[in-house]
Image 1 (cartoon, helix red, strand yellow):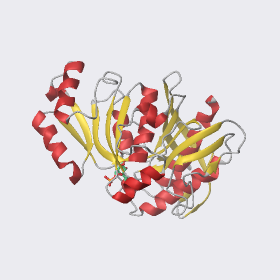
Image 2 (cartoon, helix red, strand yellow):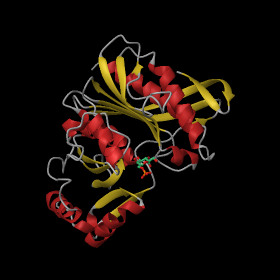
Image 3 (cartoon, protein in one colour):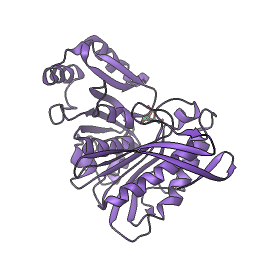
Length: 325
Ligand code: VTB
């Protein structure tokens, strides 16, 4: 996949972040999401690629923009699968909290898992633990193995998990084991990524959105980490939906190859609100704004950070800024 596409995609997440950031703390998650989604959709046309959305805003009948199967890009250039979450953390932005991002992953056609909109059990780790653990093990076994491999005492390890009622048992198991716990309000794409970068987090566990799982797996591949997943179809209808999507065994353990294939993968994200890995959008004097993005390629495992100063122009319509880039 061509390298310049990564920069083009980062330009798009930057623009989406600028639009979404205007809605920070205003209690309106729909407007924040809509602003980011419209921007990404509009800007995709300018990218020389023949893209297909495999993870987006939903099925065609429920999402007018960036629906699964929608063709994006100029239709010239490589055939690419696109996974996009224009605003990962809509509530986070609405409530003015940390760690909302705009994110896109891309891979050659046929490589990204078309993940249904349901929960996925996840285990994400960095390079030190990649290939060494299994989502099939009980969490206590996983922690014991990780502690041995990393040569860290359990009390020195940090595990992150979404703070949800459905995780009550897992959180008590973590507490019983004596590890440090980072409870996440939202945002398990960044939550999983944190396990694979220089940070205090050693492992991300628990269930979150399946589409977010594939996005995180793309980043983890670039970082030399690993994500394992298993879909959690809660109802017969959800199970049938998986079968209808061509999955022979919806409950199968999903490996990195199942989720992001064997080809080159790109991952780009721009901070919307302040985050642990990326700064959020900062508005500067004289109608300028700063964005902070990460661009990752799996081919050479490169991870680049991009800080951009934008000169904002145009009228603000409902506080939607138009960035001249
Ligand atoms: C996660 C997280 C998202 O949804 O996937 C989570 O990454 C899963 O759903 O930011 P629940 O909120 O139902 O647990 C989000 O929090 C978005 O709502």
